[in-house]
Image (cartoon, rainbow, N blue to C red; front, top):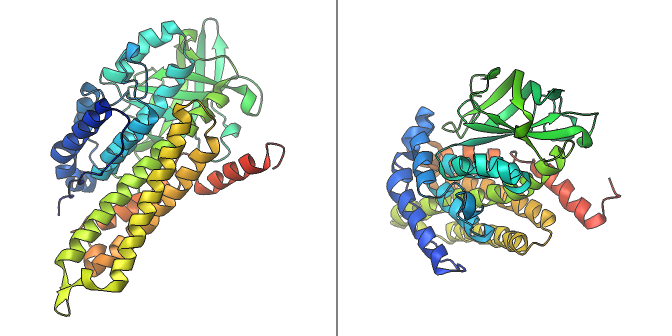
Length: 390
């Protein structure tokens, strides 16, 4: 069964421009994304042509400066765009979130010359990005990464392996964190590596339980040589840049989780109205109504959380704790909502004829990526108790 196009959500948006933007996204989701989502996920196909369309439509650089091809939209609006895309197909919503994450280092910490040279292609020129922090032996403990960049005159030579890279092997550029100094976070520097750099190769994509249309692969850097002009920020600043990017990226994951949960709820509501047992629609039974009510409440709570964090970010106020809370709640909510959707559909929910089993498989990874939910709890507690606590 093809995916159901996401119905409109009654939203409070800050401007008429934002309303027009959401209408455009909903139209693209309805016409271009949802109709083929199930088929392409089943086949493990990455929809590169959709990302070309999104780039041409101005949707790959929404939170960045218009001077470089961005949309200059507040995060409050950008995240709601992600939610709409993820409601139609998580591979697309998550892909836009990852691309935005990969663009952050250059947009926020690059020089004017670097921005002018690279950002227009990244934000509106059809390029697709990837973010390279994790490694086979450093996931949650990202500061222990081993990929090393060694200075050689006016260039750097990068050697090592990155793991769990969304868009690994197909991206046009990679934002790479590599060790240029001693152990720990202060020895890490950020680099912008072109996707066709000599010595850069990708392993076969991981065989995953969900998000099969989104390639995730290890990347091998075998003496990849790049000029110092592609170093982003100061030497030793890379880990701080990486964490700042992740604070915003976690909001992207939260919005995607809400979109996925919405898709599952919409499917469950439609099924409950149509399915009859004991001579009446199963939607008439109080137990099922209560389940739907709890699902809807989790979704609305999640949206309120990510929007509250986004508004703090847009106001230039600290939002680390709120971003971690949003990522934690929204992804846990998506997991529970998709489990409940399968339950409502009963045996049909366990078959690939309906999309809810795919939604359940996809929801699980959202509790893991960009900081597991256990890490989010550590971030929240540290913000509550102070940095001197461990």
